[in-house]
Length: 214
Image (cartoon, rainbow, N blue to C red; front, top):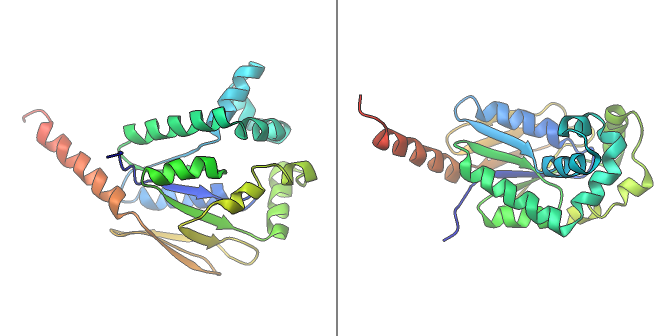
């Protein structure tokens, strides 16, 4: 039987607010359990950096400049498989609840098969354009909006949807024993993380049993 990783995968179109949501989720989980978050796209940053002889940090800092190149790499099936394999290996090694940002069905489905829940962050086009303008200093080009990674997001079958569009208001996240409660001015979403919590507790008990005698 395949290892059940029981993480949370965050997906959404450009400007939907994925990083904003992940920051608040990981902060809430950290109150009681260790959370580990990362962007699956980090793998693509590293690949582009290697080609251009630039550090991953430099690619991230100049992301608006390299966005089109990053989209092209992310649409490559080989790069997608490598990114998913790297993610699953990191999940295997973590002792916390993994929270990962992804963008493509080719990325989310293998992670869902490994036990992840997929949370779709939704936002209207006006809101998304405004956020990209504030973030990058320019509106997304038509080429960027029509990149294969954008419409392909609609093919993803999420387990949960959070409306993070215009008028949603600040997001309040509460973590308790069953999982997460995400509430803003538009909707409330409950995320069951029971399997992930059980996995952490099993690892913790294993460490206690196999640890050195006092």
